Image (cartoon, one colour):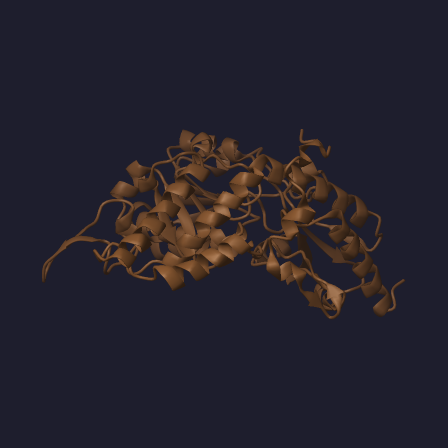
Length: 419
């Protein structure tokens, strides 16, 4: 069990950390900005911002194509980022790190490049009832194209996966099990190792959507044993437009490319083409080089903080936020109420005030939250809802931010005549 003691704070002070993020100096409607929309995207430290500027002012060039100084420096920056990612996720081979536009493209890559050639009519694709659309729609589309069936691991009313029938749901017909590590709505941290083991027992592959977990806790993909892991830079202090697909080398080697064009080829004639070696056969065209250059300092920043410390800090904040929000009789918190079992994304509804109205009133108090279905419409329907409000925390958030959230929620109720 993770404790909420503050002894870990040596070298981890969210107030000092906040000073590294220029945007957090802003005022919104005359109020101090309290940014609580981190599950959608995180803010960027000055080192990441400067890395982007440095790329465009010092060595902007295309990669793997030129022998001049700028091209060599740009290539070095891209491949340095790949090495950094490989180390961050558990010391995997650089050949197993594919750069994409984000977790969404990473999952689509697997659904097309692997799924189209390995899933057929009558096969089964297993998901959960809490998936983000990014790990739902690609598989719906694959099932439609191939005639495969979809099966879902259900959730209970407290936001936990129900695993009693796991061996039945992951049947002998199952080809892939695609599961979120941490729900972007419920905050639930799922028992990924158990699910991966069950998938492999049926000789099925396991894909983990780590978009919400990778930024917030230590994730060693080799220890997990997953066949594919997808995540995005912009949710972990990095730039938008770049993400990662980790895949086991033996599986990636047998897959056909997802995109075709420059950079991913070995040799081309007028009637034939073969592919470059891993990882480049999946990276057609000019990559987001500036994004890669800025992703490196983002990972460096998290490494210096320590991912265990990041998890402890968010656990403490989540525990405090659940405690404070639970005192508001009008608020229903979605997902587990035990902070040991969840991350720092807390979705909730007010029985009297629509989530969109809450978000707008909170914005008047400088508090930025998310309102809507959070790209998880089926999950909201399962919960009997159309939408919810969501506050989500990161390394620069404090208890004071939680207090400001609660104060603004009370003010919103008062604005609509609900004391």
